[in-house]
Image: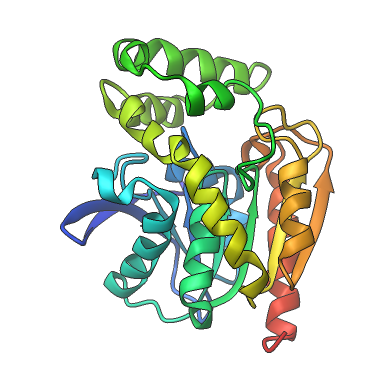
Amino acid sequence: MKPIKTKTVTVDGLTVRYAESEPRDTHALLLSPWPESVYAFEPTWTDLAADTHLVAVDLPGFGQSQGRPDVLVPRAAGAFVHGILDALGLDKVHVVGPDIGTSASLFAAALRPDRFHSVVIGSGGASADLELGEPLAGWVKDPDLTWYEQNADAIMAATLDNIFPATPLPDHVREDYLTSYGGRRFAESMRYVRAYPEELRALERLLPSIPTPVRIIAPERDQVVPPAHAEFLAARLPHSSLAVVDAGHFIWEEAPKTYASLVLEWWDLNRANPER
């Protein structure tokens, strides 16, 4: 049985795909990593949903949510998060934003910190001055997107094979990822990370003013976004906790039990200390 069943909602004129768990008193918004989708949270879903109402979302232009150039940059994605909360009738939530969700979550928290109990981020670019690993560095800097437009299916297949060589993805998850970024979708989604040089400088200026408690999960063996990016955030966010873990970039799927335990621990801590 698939724990995640998707549906859609319209936000700012765009059709946004999401999934939610059973109702609970506490809510959490999960932002899909890239190049994945809401199904990236399937391995952690049961654990995270035990006491919390989960809403997993494909941000615009990712997964199978409609995109638009103006919202495919971190600052705009952060503002869009609030539109999602409004559309779904959610007032205050925990946010889990791995990968590209790192910058979106932090911009969202900087804009309206009153809407978040806590934030969990990691495996995402944080500083324009720090090196990124491959293939992300090439995706950010390559001046010509023609090759990506013409070879999206091959890029996605190779990426997924490299991510999960020992434990293949379930067929329905792999198919969703491939479908989500087929055709021009992959090249279009690259707009987000290609905006990093400017957007991450803007984010750096905001970090010291974010009052929200933030847990940063840093996989030690992350070759896509080196742990230095997590350390950069930990040094600047005033209420942060850095957890360094023996895992690779896609820790939420490679080591789901570890990932879920770190998230649940942070939620519990910030339930016990809501004013922290």
